[in-house]
Image 1 (cartoon, rainbow over the protein chains, first blue to last red):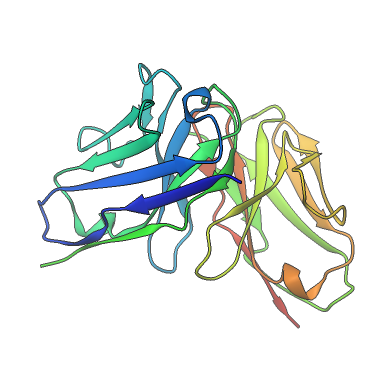
Image 2 (cartoon, helix red, strand yellow):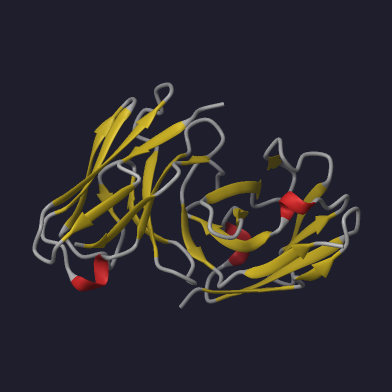
Length: 121
Length: 106
C-alpha cells in the first residue's frame, strides 16, 4: 500500500522558515511526480508545488513562488518543501501527494495525512 | 489562470437520493478534470480522473461526465458514507481546485 508520511510542521513566526518532509513507501517513488497541496483552516484545497520524477522541473503557485522550494531525494524516497518568508496566510495543513503518473499534468491518487503549519506571532 | 466554479456550495440530501454536482472551468480543460472526496480531518481521496474514469476501488455509484468547460459528478444513490465535501480539479494548465461542495444530511 502507498504510504506518505509528512513531518516538520509546527508553529513559526511571520517571516520565519520551516522545512516539511514526506517519507514515501509502498511504491516506486522515483517513477512518479509528487506534489504539495495545502488547506487553510475551514477552507478549500490549494495546490502549491509539483516536482517531476527527475526533480529537474518544478512548478509553483503564484502565492508561494520565490518563497517555497520543492525538492526530492529519490535515493531516500523523500519529498521536501523548504518554506521561507512565511506569512499568516500560509497557515494550513500541508499534504504531500503522489501524482498518478510520471508527468505533472495528472491528478493526485494518494495523499498523506497532512502536517499543520501555523504562522503566528 | 483557470478558475473552477462548483455548484452548489452546499447540498442537502437523503440516503438513496441521486446527487449531482457541477463544475465549470473558465476556459477549456479538455478532459483533464478530477473529482475528490474529503471527509473532516482526512486527506482528499481521488474518485474520478480524466472527467469520467473511475479510480480503482471507488464504488460504481460515483460517475463523472463532461468535457471542455462543463463537468458533472453524479452519485446515483447516496450512501451514509458519502456525506463529505467534494472538489473538482483541473490539471490541463497548471492545477486548480474548485471551492468545494459540501453534501450534508437533509
